[in-house]
Image: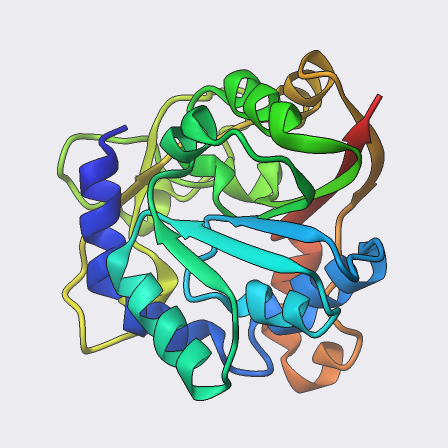
Length: 257
């Protein structure tokens, strides 16, 4: 996958993404964060790394736990511009660095006590190399929490077909086919501010994730598949039922073996 194209896409849709996901009823706030919060170790006084930090949403959450340092890394200058503006507004001391996470991990020689990433790993083809790199900079007593697009969810992304936009009928589960996928992001599709364009990523199966983790020398402490909030059953019945049929997130808590 061309990292340059990924960067350009995220630069273009950064504000639309922030607007779409910053609502308190967004999937990030209502499904992902409550579960991550339950899984969190004590990070007070620790060094924290947020891989694919985007606009810094989770980095800012982590700052409330009083870590010693937080570094957020992301490929998109547009996303980091939003993060830095927010950091300035709230007097945050988080450091943000623009770099693709594979390149960052290959060059990084510092250890971190807590490593986190949210919905980034489907942009990475080689999971085994990725988790080995993470293992190499995670401190001996450190914890890693990785939130990924659930394999069932990414399985329904349409298979890539050049520059052609997929039809609605192509959004069908194709679980064991790990070919490259192309699709229109929901925050683009429902926005009049940005013209529709293809985003490209990979689909990794459950066994792909587990095998990559185990071969890296990391230990799986816990795997969670968050439910939608029960109040959505009446408030947003269509969204609730869709989440029950097709889970959005899978969250892994890892440590050294």
